[in-house]
Length: 229
Image 1 (spheres, rainbow, N blue to C red):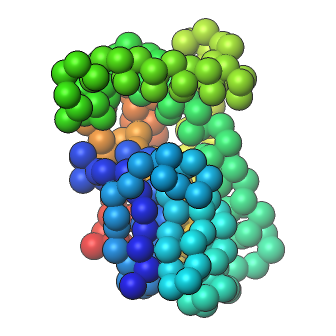
Image 2 (tube, rainbow, N blue to C red):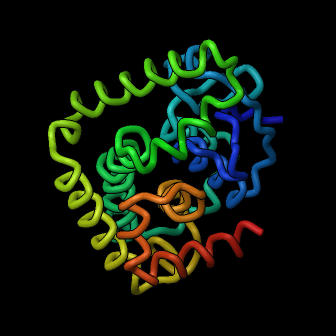
């Protein structure tokens, strides 16, 4: 069976949008899989998720989905037209190349989110190591955000970037039940992975409050949860 190597899921939802993306894709596409808890330093590219599928080991959520389409067929996207694929690409890039970094800031840097995330992510560690490892991890996230660019902005500016992404996504998906049409596609795996990690986890942030300003996003998550069973 396909083995999907991911972070632990303390809230019943994987805290990594990219791990949840692949899990959601497999469920939507009807591909049997087993989740295996892993650590990033053991992954081929130093990040999760990755899969082991027979003799193949594949890292990176996008490359994983490409591999699954090649090996198991493409039941979700095969019938999409060019316009749907273009809209889906833009939604996915907005989620993964912009909104994701606002989510990182909301959880790891903003004190409101960090107060909730730190004990959940690092609570199982021995007390002597807990604070030190949490500090090192947080410092790494801060450095990554600064390198990406968003970490150079003020908290208010970062939240404004996330609010703009959420408003654009809400408008883009409003005409359809799912990301680009009447049925879920691989683009919904990306969108659900991000939105679920903003709205369906018990971490109150400014980003979550902005997302709740768009009832259509909550309704979208309800439809996806019904689809996923």
